Amino acid sequence: MSDENKEGIPQDTEEKAVAGPENGAPGSGGGGKSRFFLVLSAILGLLLAGVVAFYNVPAFHVLLHPHAGGDNTAKTADMYTCGMHPFILSDKPGNCPICGMTLTKIESSPAPGAAAAVSSAPATKPSGGARKILFYRNPMNPNITSKSPAKDEMGMDFVPVYEDEVKGSGAGVNLPEGYATVQVGAERVKLAGIQSATAVRETISHPVRAVGVVVPDETRVRRVQAKIEGWIEKLHTNFTGQLVTKGQPLLEIYSPDLVSTQREYLLARAGVDRMKESPYQDAREMSSGLAQAARNRLKLFDVPENFIEELERTGKVQRTVTLNAPVSGYVTGKEVFEGTRVSTGMDLLTVTDLSRVWIEADLYEYEAQSVRVGQTATLETVADPGVKLKGRVSFIYPTFSPETRTLKVRFEFPNPGLRLKPQMYANVSLDLHSVTGVVIPDSALIETGVRVIAFVDTGDGSFEPREVKVGVRGNGKAQILSGVKAGENVAVGANFLLDSESKLRAALTKMTGGASAPPQPQPQGQGGHAGHGGGQ
Image 1 (cartoon, rainbow, N blue to C red):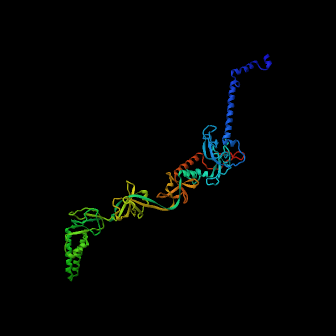
Image 2: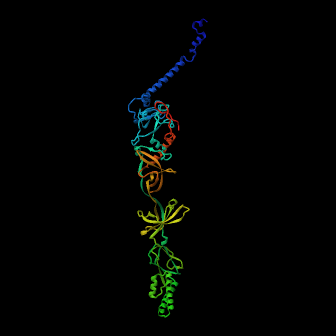
C-alpha cells in the first residue's frame, strides 16, 4: 500500500512495464526502431522517384505543374513510352522510372505538353484540311465514350475519334466486311513500291487460245475409183504427194468393156449416117438415139471428152483409155501399181485440194459456250513464226469428249504456199465477248475465293478497299461492272501488302470495340469535363 500511495500505480504493473523492454514487448526496443526506418526509407524513395519523374518525364511535369498561357496547339515530335506502362511518356530515350525497361519510340506522337491540349487543338488531315472529331473514348476501355473532352479515374485524357478514322476502321457502309481503309502516307507508298493505275473506259475482249491439228478439208478430197473391170497399163502419177492439176492424166486402163463400147459407138454413128437418106423419120430418130446412148455410156465410164472426140475424128478403137484428174491437188493416197487388176468400185488414187484446210481444236466447257459459227480467228504455227493467218469458225461439234471434257471446234483457214500441212500443230486465237466498259489492270484484283477486292487510291497515301464485280477479262485487263468508276486510281503493285494491312487494322478495331460512335454518349462529371458513358 505504501508503494501504491506513493506513485498511484500498482507495484506489479510497474514491474511489468520495466520488464517489458527486456522481454521484447511490441512497440518498443529494437523491433520498433527497424520498422520505423523501413517506412522512412520507402517514403524517401517515393519522394526521390517523384522528383526524378517531375523533371525527366514530361507527362508528370505537365500533370503536376501545368504552364498557364502559351500555345496549346499540339505539335509533333519524337516521343518514347514504356511498353508496360503506356502512360509514361518522354521526349528523349531512356528507361522507365517504374520498371526500368527501355523506352520505345512512338512515331508522330504529340510533343511534350501537348497531351492536355489535344482536345482543343484542331487536327488536320494529310491533305491539310481540318479533321472532324466525332467523340472521345476512354483509352483503357473503348466502350466508355464522351461527347466532350474528359479524364478517366486514373487521370488519363480521353482519346479523340475522328470522322476519317470511323470510315477507315471498317464502319463505312461502302467498305467490305473485314477490311479497313489503309493510310500509309506518300513516303511509305514509295518505299513499299505501291503503284497505281487509272481506270479507263475502253473496249475489251476475252481471248481464247487453243492448240489445234491441221486436217484436210473433207469437202476437197476426191477419190479416183474404177467403174469398170480392167488392168492398169500405165501410171502417169506414180507416187504419193505428187501435185496434179485438174484434167492432168493420171493412168491408162485396159478394159474389154471399154473396147466394146467404143465399137458400139462407132457402129451407131455409121447407122446414123446411113439413115440420113431414109424417108422414115422414126428410123432416123432411132439410129440417132442409139449413137447418143453409146456416147453417154463412154462418159459414164469416166472416159475423157477429148478421148471421145478423138474417137469420133479417127474412127479407130483405142486399146487403153486415159483417165484424168477430177480436181487439182496432191496425191494423198495410191492403191495401185502398173499391171494391177482392178474391179468395179476399187480405190485407185486419192487427190486432196490443200488450198484451204481445217483446224480442229478442243475448247473447255466455259470457253465453248461463247463460240459461234462465223467468228473470226487467228492462227500461228511454231514452224513458221511471225506469220498470222485469218480464218473463221466453220463448225462446232454437237458432243463433248467424255475423256477430256472438251468440245471440238472446227476452224477453216486459207493455205497459201502450203504453209499448213496435215497433222501439223497450230495455235488458234479467238476473241470473245468484245464489250466496252470501265477497265483496270488484272493485277489490281485480289481474289478471296468469295469476292474480288480492289484498293482505290484516294490520295495522300490513303487506300480504300472496295468489293468489285468483274466482267470480261483478257490481255491482262478486266472489265469492272461495279465498285470502281472511270478516272479513279487503283493499286496495281504491292497491293498484297495493302490487303494484309487492311485486314489487320479491321481486326484490331474489332478487338478494341470498333471505331463507330455510340448512339447516345452520356456525359458526366464536373468542371466542364464529361464523365464516363455507359458501355455499348
